[in-house]
Length: 382
Length: 230
Ligand SMILES: Nc1ncnc2c1ncn2[C@@H]1O[C@H](COP(=O)(O)OP(=O)(O)OP(=O)(O)O)[C@@H](O)[C@H]1O
Ligand SMILES: [Mg+2]
Image 1: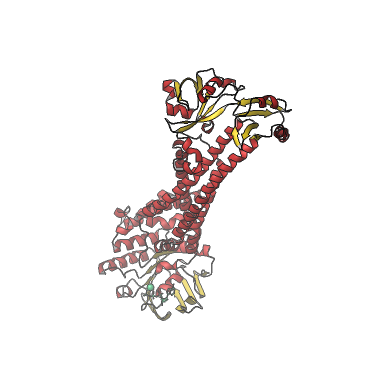
Image 2: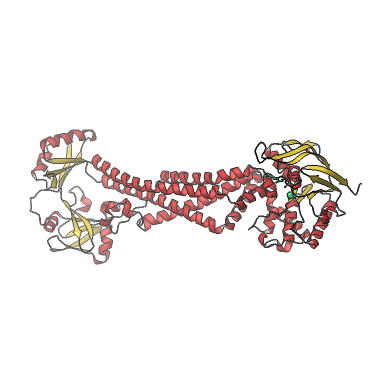
C-alpha cells in the first residue's frame, strides 16, 4: 500500500511536469473544456433555479381560478359569480381577486399590481400604503425614499407609503409586485366600485374532487374558463422544458464538437508523445504505469476544468443574472430588467454533467495511448 | 550470461514489406565483459540488441538469461526483467525534453515507488560520478551531445542493472568524447557490469576494453573474435 501510494505520487509528479511542458496546448484544451462545462452548468443552474421559482409561484396559487371570457378574451368576472360559486359544495375561501399589469414608462418595466388576499393578513393594507417586491424596490431606490410614486395609466400621480419590501426568497414571484388596497387599485386603474373582479380564486376541501368541481362550475357558468393549479404547473413545465430543450440541443452539438476535439487531440498522438511512451517503456515502465499516468493527466485536467467551469457558471447565473443565457432561457427577461435568481443547485444534474464530460474525455485520451502503450518499445531505437 | 538459440526476427511477417532483420543467430554473451556487435548499416545490429534487451520478442528461437528463458515471458514479466536487468543508452539518447536532468535520471525508478530522498541521492551520486551534478536542474534540451550521453548513462544505471546496452554510442560524438565514453565503459566494467555495444566505429571496435567482437552481415553472424581471453 505504501509502495502503491509512493508510485502514484511519482506518477502525479511526472504528469504535472508533463502538462506544464506543453503549456500552450494544454491551456487551450483546458480553456475549451472549462468553457463547455461552464455553459452546460449554467443551463443546469438556470433551469433548476427557474423550476424552484415556478414551484414557489404555485405554492401560493389557488387550487382553482375562474375567469370570465367574453368573445374568447379574458374579461372582468361579474360580482354575482362570487355568490353563485359559494354554493358549490367542496369549495372554500372563494374570493374575487383584483390584479393587473402596469407598464412603467419611467423604467421600461412591467409591474404586477395586485390587491392582497383577504386571507393574507400579513400583507393587509390601508389606503395609501403599499408593499412591493425587492426588484422594484431596487429600481426605484425605495429603501432610501420610503415612498413609491406611480403615474396611473390615465396620468394621475399616486403616492404610496412603502410599508414593507417582500423578501427575496423567490424573485420571480414577487420581484415586480406592487400590492395596494382595493380602493387604491380601483382609483389607479379607474375602475367602477362594483365592476367585478379580474378573476375568482378558490381552494378545494378535498383534492380528489377538483375535477368534479370544475365540471360543476363549467355547467353553472358557461362563459367561465376554469383553471386548476395542475394546468398552470403543466404550462410552466412545458415552457421551461421546451426552452431548456432548445438550449440543451444546441449544447449537445457543442459537446459533440468538444468530443471530436478531445478525440482529435488524443488520437493525433504526436510523434513526440509516441516516442516518449516508447522511452518510458524501454526504461522499465509497464503499460499499466503509462495508462495510470495518463489517467491522472485526464483526471487532473477534467477536475480542474469541472471545478472552474461550475464555479464560473454559479457566479454567472446567480451573481451576474445569467447575462449570457437569460435572453434564450427566460422569454420574459425584458419584463424583469433587474431580475436575479435564488441560488439553487441540482446535485444529480451536476453529477450527470461530470459523468458525460469527464468519462468521454478520459476515454478519448486513453484509447490511443493504450494503442501506443501496448506496442513494443523498440521504436525508440529508430 | 545471455544465450541466443536460433534466433530470428522478421518484421511485417507475411506482408509484402516483410524484412528478415536477424536470421538464425546462435550466440553466447558472457557476463562481466564488453561485447561489441559490428557490421555495415542494415546488418541487424540494432535489431539484435532490442531482442537481447527484451525491448522486442524474437519471431523464432529462444533467448536465455542465466539459463532462464526470457523471450516468451508475458509482457508484465518481460518488463520486470528489463527493468531489473538492463540499462539502455540509446543512439539518440532519448532523454525526455522539458524535464530536468535529475528527473530524467530518476524516471526508470518511478514505477518501483522508492523513497524520494533515497532515490534523489542515488541519482545525484550517479550524476556526480559522471561530472554532471552541477547541471542536475537543467532541462535536457540545453545539454551538449556529450552531456546528453552521460545523462543517458546515469539513467541507465539508476536501477543498478547488471547489463548495460548501448546502441551506436559514439555516432554523435567527436574523438575526445568518444574516448571519454570508452573511459566510462572501462569504469563500468571494473564495477562488474556486463556491457553490449553496437558500433561500426573503429575507435570502439579496436579499443582494448572490448573483450568480444561479433561481426554481422545481412542479419547473420559472420564472425566472432574473442580478445583478452581470461
Ligand atoms: N520496425 C521495423 N520494421 C521494418 N523493418 C525494420 C524495422 N526495424 C528495422 N528494420 C529493418 O531491419 C533491417 C536491420 O535493421 P537494423 O536497424 O537492425 O540494422 P543496423 O545494423 O542497426 O543498421 P545501422 O548500422 O544503420 O543502425 C534493416 O533492413 C531495417 O530496415
Ligand atoms: Mg542500428
